Image (cartoon, rainbow over all chains, first blue to last red; front, side, top):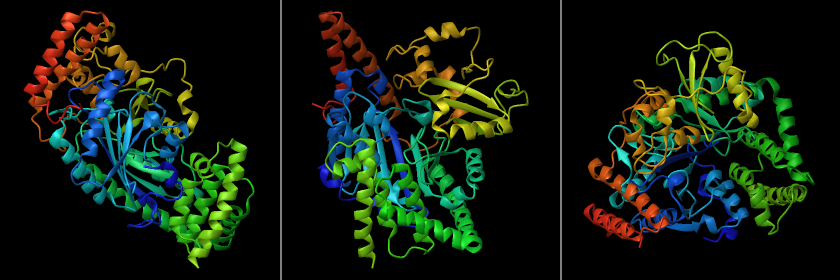
Length: 355
Length: 191
């Protein structure tokens, strides 16, 4: 897989298609699995890690019917390339920053990634556009079943799949959706929604999962519990509650349009104007303005730009992406200038396409 | 972020909120890299905890003097925490103390080795201690035998490190024998 060529394209999960894709950016399911005959990663020395990585790589790359995978040896990648994969949601920050033998297998469309030697021996991830948890589950089941034919995963009858951290034991599943909730944030209704979610054991995180801060009104909602419920029950738990949040966000958007249309339109137009004309812009401000523009498109206050273009800009304006695009190491100040230049160019192009 | 398990009675006696003295209604088990901590909060303080947790600096959360992190461990019988801390898994060698400080286990067998201590912790995190999801196709028995390989490998590593080549050779043979007994040699070995 040639990472440089990826700077010009996006993963299929950014397409902006699928049910409720105006609010649900993407759906994601991951499974944690460990090989029964090896210690967990924290107790595996260099040789053992090599052995685990070689074994899992050969199994993953030999899968009979799944999508075609490209394997990247993460330990051999430059820091900027690891960061690039984090920005594209293909590996976790922990996987990028850790040490020792580790890798990732990525499908061409970037909707499947298998991290080897992350916190667990294997983390399988399926990522799709819109609210599409069922199709994520179908695909990840297929992959897990195929691997199960040749590998013996650590499992016991009482506690299910055994994982390095007790918070993942049982199903080893994390089901999550990334939501864009600008109206709930704007009206400060968001805390009410989050409290309700916490009470039913759902976690709220930022764009990049555990420990990351919410940026640009994007939030990940996921199950907290992994033991004592079936995978389907955990998926249904999210599927039951997400429509309510979507409805809540839509209702608040409608109210905003009804009561403050002029102010809202003004704020969105200014955000759009800044993105098209700024000479220097931080990544936080970019996220914030793109979030306004994204809502503007959904409310039909902006009609010459599409959702996929905004989704793509959210990823392509991040530090590693910019540096790879311009093919040079940039310091913060240079990056802010490069980001503004990139946005001006890309928005001029994309606006043309839409018309 | 912790794991609030709302409206479930705490195990054992009724707990007071760690930040004020009202009865605690929310019980949170935090599994951070710094280890395993349990928090008991009332509704009001839980709200503050949530607001606070949303900022990235929350790992430095100031504690009131008497609220040093409580360890989510229930002691069984008359074993002391010091004794428990010394207990180590015969397969991977991790001590209970190491698990407590890292929040990560060393091998699959630890779930059996430390079962008595882990079950209350799992109950706190998940509210349940019985898996009812997907099952792998392989029998659990074969899986249990596989954990022996972890011990044999660790012993092999120690033997090599201390230059005991005779026992290293024996261990290598034992690993190969067990692997072939479990049918691992053809399709599951890397080389």
